Image 1: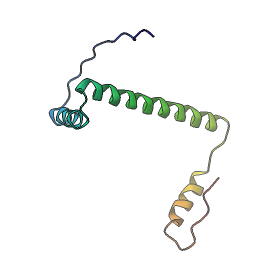
Image 2: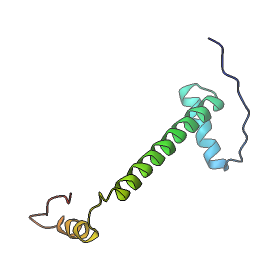
Image 3: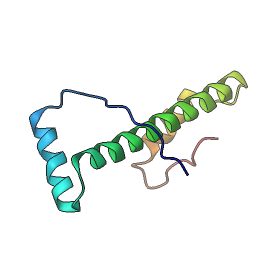
Length: 89
């Protein structure tokens, strides 16, 4: 299997963050580049999931599948009581 091409990306990183990256790289015996690739991949996956969930939520709103705000507030306020309300559906 052919190895995918690469591209150099640069960023100005605050020194405390760069030091943390170096510490983790040393602890894991990995390169700084490896740590940065892992972090960037994880962040991109998180953002893609956030976008998917946002689109899903907007589709629910468009379909009228929403919970009344007052019902949510009443439920939240009941959580400190001896008999909290059931989760609104």
